[in-house]
Each structure stands twice: as structure tokens, then as C-alpha cells.
Length: 482
Picture 1 (cartoon, helix red, strand yellow):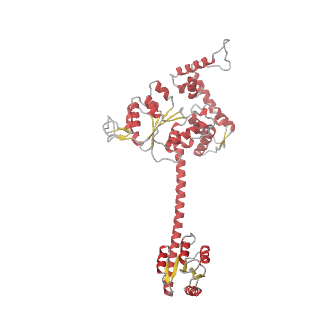
Picture 2: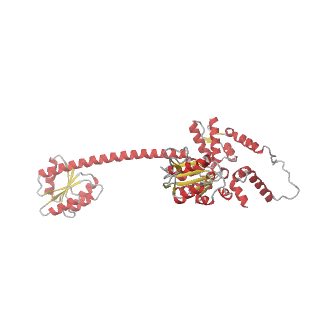
Picture 3: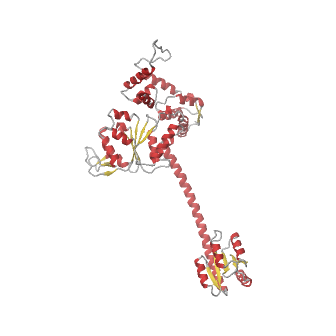
């Protein structure tokens, strides 16, 4: 073992060197403590033996310097004490000294101390090796867990649909930012409005899961798909014997199943009017009763609602409660139709192409500029859902590296069929051969009349009237305000 010895008395120093050499060790003698300290910092010495009483720097100061440095803190320091230094030696033990030897030094005691130090250093070395191995394994496992977590997050984004949200347009970016904000406060109910196919449920999932995921449930109800007579039981659950055909032992409703997570009410405008006051009470008091139950239950979930029709208009027509509407609208998101955010089309189309090519094992990797022009010119009345279905259909029946116009030629055919079906039984407007009267035209009055006729045609449904006129519902709304 390499041993550094420090003593200003050369005779004592040489005696120590000889004894340690005879014991099979490698002593390095120093009479100057400062030089010894510098040597210890340059080269590792498992054991340092130093006299206490020395000029310029005593042994206790040297001990403190050694134990205060990362390079030398693990070395064993043995102090050599003379008569009257016993109290100092005991104090040195409290400062980290390994042991002490009394003068005159007994060779057997010296050999015993050195042997114990060698064992101690071997244990320290083994401990360091074990710690390094443990750190390496921990880092390896942590790396694996991080990769697994990243894969899980990627899968979550794909399964939930969150990965299909792209924000190339300012309008979509605003929706995304608001969704992230609402994610941080689960006490705020959120109302999401937008045309069919704009991705309202995907935004609802983004609010629930956030960017990093959420372990709590996301429970969705399509209000239009549940018979009115079963809606209350579906939402609130029921106790045993609550009604004919109820489950023995009762059954929890969606309010309970969503505990800690999110309850998503899609097409909320279709909720029975008679149940809307009960939902309002749940939101206000955060408690509810099962159907046929007498025990009050706590409601602990976020509520997100979605509507593809003008909910404010439904309120005005008495089809939806005003107080519930305003309670749901604390957080409000409006998703513009795809035709009003064309900047998102290239990114969405590229994302869908990549996904479908991987799923169907096709060659597609990119979209030609000509095909992209076709996609940008299309009206996308079905919004993002229609775009995704279009790409899937093109990939299904073709297999080329580049998506070309001929792969999506069915878009023009579908549009012709759609226009033809809408015009059956009516006299189509011949735009090319339109003849104007001699008298001046009140364009504003004519536009208002057309809009009113469209609303009458669809019984006041603004979404259908807007689609019929080829404008967005929000453009129609602005026209009505004007």
C-alpha cells in the first residue's frame, strides 16, 4: 500500500520509512507538510501518517485540509502524538482522523494500524465499485423507463388522437394554448363548439391528458346516441330495483366512472331538457344521487361538453337551458372549420399520409404540389375527419411514393354527386348565364333574402344553412349580426 508520511524530524521520518518498507509497503517521506499536502492532492495515498507538532502547518491543520478536499477526503489519516498531545489527538478523531499512535512508536502497533487501514480502504474501494455499478444500473433502468414512457406517450397521443392536432394556423394555435391552460385547472367546465369533424373530442382529450399524459379516466358520452328514457341512469347510475330491468346490486353511472378524471359530453345539445337542471345542480354542488338512491355521492371530475350546432341559438329557441349554457361556458373554445384554416391542411395531410402508409405498409412518403393544390381548393365540409378519410382512401387503393392528383380524383366526383343531390327537384342557379335586371339591385337586401331563405329551408339550423351557402357558420353569424 502507498503510504505518505510527514514529520519534520528526519530521524523519526527515516525510522518510519524503514519499518513500513520492511512491512512491504511503499512509503513516501516528507518533512514539509505543505509539500506533502500538494503531493497527496496530485497522487492518491490510501494512508497518510503525520506528526501533530510541526512548524508552518501542524498535523491537525493538515488533517482538516485533507478531509476538506474531494481528492483526499477518503484517505485514512493517522496522527503521531507526543506527551501532552492526547487531548489534541482525541479532538482529531472527531475531525475525521482514522487513528493515532503514541511516541515512541511501537512497530507492532504501527503494523496493526496499517493493516486495519488497508482493510478499511479495501472496503471503501469495494463500496465505490458497488455504488458505481448501482449508478450504472439505475441509469440504464432509468433510460429504459424513459424510452418506455416516451413510447407510451407516443401511443397515447396516437390512440387518443392528440397527435392529429397541428397548429400551423393562428386560430388553431389559440385553441391549443387555451386547451393547455384549461388542462391546469380541472375545476373549470369547458364548452367546445365547432362543426362536425373539426376534432372537438380530440381537443377535449388534449385538455384531459395535457402534453405528458394523465392516469385518470376519460369517460365520453354521445348524448345523441342514448335514448332519452335511459339517459338519467346512464349518467347518474342506479340503485338495485330502481326500475324494471335494472341491474341487481345497482350500477354506477358515468359521473362515478369519471372520478378524478374527465366526463366528456359530446353533442350536449341533444341532452334531454328535463335532465339539464340535474346536471346544473351537479356542477354547482359537486354531488348527486343515483336513480332510486338516497345516499348523496360526491362528484369529482372535470366536465367538458361539445356541440356541433349553435348552442346559443338553441338557448334562444328554448331547446337548451340558459343557466346551464352559461355554467358550461366558463371555459369556451371555438374550433374553426378546416376551410377557414387552410394553413393546417398540408401538415394534417402529411401526418395522415405517414400514418396510413405505415399502417397499410404502403410506399407513400410525400404529397405532390399538384395534389396539395387539389386538397387546398377542396371545401372540406366534413373538416379534418373528411381529410383523414380522403387520405386513407387514397392510400388504400394506391401504392406510390408520392400522392398525386389522380389518387384523389374521387374528390371532384364526390363533389359533383353532392351538388347534384342537393339540386334535385330545384332549379339550379346558372352562374355563367345569369342575367341581371335593368333596374338597380340592392345587393345587401338580396344577400339578406338569400340568407333568410337558407335559414327557412333548414328550420333555422345555422350550421346546415351555412354549409348550403358555402360559408362558415361564423361567417353566417357575422352576416346575421350585420
